[in-house]
Length: 474
Image (cartoon, rainbow, N blue to C red):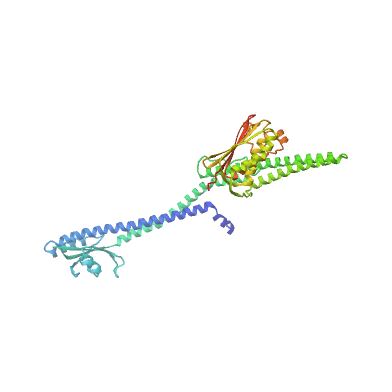
């Protein structure tokens, strides 16, 4: 295996998961085995202590019998018969000098520590492990004070070797050393199997995601039906592909619509220029033609500016000059500007009186927003109709309603009117000069101000556009 191949192998997720699984298994096993080892040692020593205390109690009872020497010799013969845990003992006086020493105790020798004598005088027993220089194995001793008539009379030192404790612990460690490699091998195989099984859907997701391009965005990943994290991942990727599909579709429609909308006036201008140049004409005719060209240029310029604005808004490149402003005064000023156009069409434009309302917004964009809504109301309301602009405060939002008695919008088309280049009646839009970008811009402005816009319309009866904007609280 080359170095690059080996490095790539160890970078695989299943290899890393297996490694961490084995490492966790090893550390957990060592912790558990260490706990069991110390627990076993503690329990074995506890059993020995219980044995020594029982013998100490029996020896203490022997010291109360008469004659003491015969009782002590009988006790020594009794403990010498023990083979598994031989008992070593000696009896000290209150001053720490030996009173009686068993035969086997003389063979190991032991010096009395100051701690034993101090604890005995306080009526406390002393438990200790003692290592003798000539002995390889340690001994366990318990020194117990014996009080007679309320004063310290004897100190009984009872002990035995820890040979079998060490042997049992050694056997336990040997068994662990044998079992741990087997457990590690089984754990490695189990970890590898679990890692491969857990990550197997990743391969399907990766291969399927590679096969999806802009030409087949309608394809989706198939869920396994397990409702686990992998299914959540597949759902997330499917949602992302759906958004990409919608974005590509909107981009294609936008490009086609923009090309068509730009091509139509340019072709019309070219045709009019060819007609003007087809024969000699008077200065007045050429002047009328140039005026018409300028109107066409203005229309194209407005359309291009709107397209640039929407393009920048898609990429979040439009900076808003936000600040507190009086929304009631702004709407009143815009309504006054459209009052002349409304009077020319014999339309009653009513602006309800309302209280002072302050919002945080971009003055230029909000002017553009309400100019679009009021301008559309004037355009599509026939002569003799009416338009009402009303402002209401509702909790944390201000609600602006623009209601007209115009031609209305069919219910099935109300969800589409905010799409770019969408026009309910294209023949009527040609007459009014619209290209279907005004409401798209209006919707973007409202969303940029953390608000929302709604439409409620009925065909041949009129429409109501409602804008919700958050109130600015000083």
